[in-house]
Image (cartoon, rainbow, N blue to C red; front, side, top):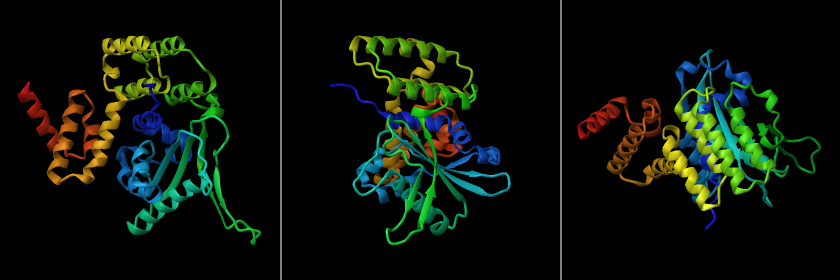
Length: 319
């Protein structure tokens, strides 16, 4: 059976690893006003509830690349940033993509500004990763044929990778490399041998890549390349797997593991309390063994620092 791209999980790893860089690129006017020392608050659980309102349950659980975060500004105000990655041309007889972005907006608006009394301002952006112009809206306009004036115009930020001008992105921003990889997939049709050579060359470069903050970002770049450029030839795929094993480090944690961890988090609402907590601890153990930063583990599992330290002690005893 032919391998399939997993664009959604690949982009999720990028949005998580390069959160700051994504915000800087999409919302430059807001970026310098954010108090980054306070960190960001992930609203992914709330986002999934919103997605279940817009889509059916099965469809919503497959959408894991979307990101929604709350940031605090230096002037004590706050903003909710919603980032959507569209991996394929969207079309429907009854709904256009711009309308779907508007539905996200008013659901977010209602959930936070009214139901939760959160006065954060809301801004959204969409990243188009596919070829062609179908569905690449920049706004949603609601109007009636009987009325001359538009009733509603909703604008959102967009990035179209197909038409991206890389000169506008700093060489110091590793997202430049991310978008180059994504764009090259749209521009060329290559053989397995060419894909293999490109992946090896880039992986060699990433070993000493100095434009990233941590190993998590390097790993995200490696996985992103791997899941954009699939090798069908089993022998070449085996050779690339051997290369990763020898390289170690950033090449150890695969994107399948990222997806499994995500679904374990999603599945916690369906389990009993004890099972949920045990699942969190098991995830934490796996991440600790892989050398993942403790702050990331706390954010991923929602365990306390004390609980993480107890797990570390248990691991030390077992060794």
